Amino acid sequence: MIQSASNTYLCPGERHGVSRAVHRARLAAGYDACRECPHRGDTAGLPRRQIERLEQIRVAKRPLDLFHPEGAGGRYLNLLDAAAVRRLAMAHAKLLRAGTAAVAGDYCVVVGHDGRSETAELAVAARDGLRFFGCPPHDRGATTTADIARRIAAEGAAGGMFVGNDSAETGRIAIRFFGPLGQPLSAGDGATGKQLFGGSLDRIAEAYHRPPSRPVRSGSDQRGESCPPEGLIVSDQGGRTLRFVLDTGNRYLRRFIPAASGGHHALIQPAEERVAHRLGVGRGPLAAAVIRQQADFGIWIDGHGEQCRIVDERGADVSAELLTALLAVEVAGSTKRPVIVLEPATAKPVVALLKRVAQVRRGHPRCEAMFARMAETEAAFGGGPSGRFWFGGPTPTSDAAGALRLLLKTLQAAREPLSSLLDHLEQQTYDRSKAA
Image 1 (cartoon, rainbow, N blue to C red):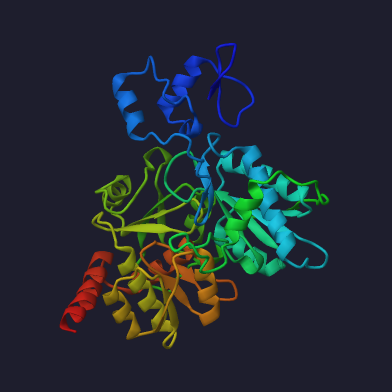
Image 2: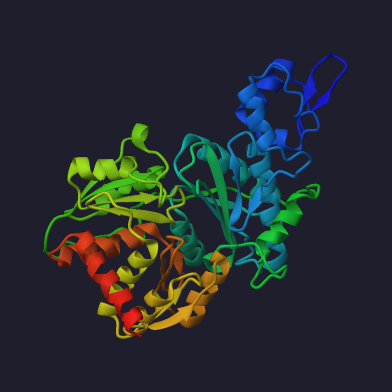
């Protein structure tokens, strides 16, 4: 903030000043712009405990972290508002027009969101930015990233954008970018200083920080109808009926999963009880709801419809690696020695177990490279510790709805609860590794 002659402060990136009271309120609330403000040390009037907390997280003059390895994200309005999303869309359109041959003279871009009012508003801004650079948007409305990827491939679109939330943090906005064939765009590998694959997101970031160019031409919107998730059509094959608790901020999934789950009963976690469910934090609201409802398991799905976390019927967290092994064994049961791509951080005992039933290939932590690895090896399934589960086909997708369908199929055929299945699998996995 820069203090003006009228005794007001001007936040970095803003055109109008604010009073000292607003300045102090923003400091207390952890306003994102305060991280690069030269006057963030002006804390007079704040409680001592608040000042001590601010000192602990002091990072003056640091650029705002808009981009992350798999897209862009931040607090709604604090870091990502309509103007920022419009610029992101223009940067994406510029990249697509520079590197993609137009299909039938068109650079159509598929756009969707997770169904929240704030993401719907920002999706409108994204469509405006795409039109500015001559990329007519195809509006899918409330959906998932997996649906966006499939529509890009089916329609021969130049790319796609999705506005959602890749975590359970309330008020967070995360944007994913897609290229031709539905390939997700990721950043280069910053750990080694080299782009091991693609690094397309880095080029979007570069274009974002440059002044916007003059418009190319405008395009008219296309609209698509919402339909049940393609990966979740569950057929009733007999066996027991399952009850599961669903916790997700994606309103599209909250609407369609109960209708697409066959004869199984989906119990939607009430919005007021939905709190971040993370591994290793103890028994949270999802686990409590599973026990209270006497459900067979609970599932948390992020706002993108990509990552998921599972708790068993006892309310215990399920290891993402063990879940990967369980689902991979189910895939191998219907396909003779399929190709399965595992993330690099997957434990060696799990890799050894799956090598007995499938052809195992190593993937990459970035989604862009994981997509390419799945396509290159014609893999049927992929996954690992991240909680992303990939499904093969013409357009490989990271699809939590597909993982739910596969888990329902596995439990429907089994005569024991999820915890018992996982205990047997864990014993088989790690006992064999000790013997070796």
